[in-house]
Length: 265
Length: 351
Image (cartoon, each protein chain N blue to C red):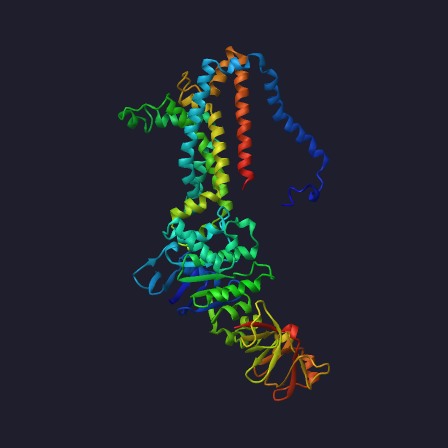
């Protein structure tokens, strides 16, 4: 409580402000550059062009599905990681969270050799008549792969912080494990779940490397907004800047949303 | 309703057995690390002992070790409710829904659960706070709500783990009174550091030290005549039971002890008990001047050196004095003396 109170703070060394200001400028200046270079006169026209709209809608659709998948799989994962203890759990946690630090393009290669035509599971899917690689499904898988750890990490942290005391009380009042999970555990970590979900959505929306490797860049099928921006940069720099600004705005909204979720803890 | 407890938790070095009779409240006393919390964890099913037999009302809750049969009932299926130091009201539910949580989990409908919750909130005297959020009530009110929540679950056994330790001293007496009322005909175990809790809430006391039972018996017996080192340190109180009349407890042997009645005060003619610490008792050879309201002529029966002082016993009463005073007053068993205690040092509780 007192940590944020300016009256009780001890003095900072003055020289610290210089690198801090340089760092902040380093992060903020590129954003300013984008805003300055945006062709405002053609802005609406650029971001509503056929291909831009298609890319944006595809991005929103796939990121939403990926986010829902992340919640469905990530919540149980976080609960198991936070609430159980057994040998090998620590190693498993590190491995499951690997996509956080793995270069996305490597993730894409890995997905290709799992779900691709000659991949680990690909042949089984082939028998069922399903082809995943280079489809919209592949986009969703790539986004889920990179975004899942964000949700798991932030929810696991929230679960650990909230502790088990309320769950123990709930059980002593006669609530079975499912009731405890539904009526106590989840409501208590809701802010953590919200900010984790928002982070996962943002990560999915920005996904590039794994998508282009595993799903390719077919217009209307797998060409999401980040891919569209990258391709336009060659032929239509102004269009690329305008679309980038759209993603910047989305990112700012996401951060605002995540902060709100966190501050209501 | 009875509880049979017999368990060994090897890595904590706790091995003990005891029983709680139907409707009885037992206090577990003991220093930190003596095994009190371990016992509660075993009973509520949060801890799997190495060997155990825990039976509540004829139903085996935990049976591990010796016999081939293994039973371990899940915590939510034991009908054992707990009350901790902190109220731990679910922060996302209203006070009413907190109390309704137990009945709802037990399968009651939403409206029936809320009705039951209203009843228990009225029972603990906070019916008007039903719609508040837990962060909108005081610590004492929250603990009352926690009591109501535990009772609403209709447990067969109630475990109280220092239920008043985290409360403001100003609200402790009222809550203690509530618990006295609530525990009167319930089977319960109270872990406490507070002598008054043990005295006023419990019928019997079990003293633990290093994971073993070192002393057990009726509360008044153990607390006035403690034999174990721990009980002696926290207890050894003077305790005079009688009838409350005109601001004093009238004892059977003719003694009148003036004192300050705790809230709520007993009515005239009600049974009451006067409690005061031996350290509050001054010892004289003859009646002191200035006539303190409480001066009793006694005969010294025993001198018992304790660290830093000497406990002078005279029948049921005792006084703590310095070794120097013992010498100056020339105290010895058989010697007549006068015990004096200020009325402000005497607490009176209804019994």
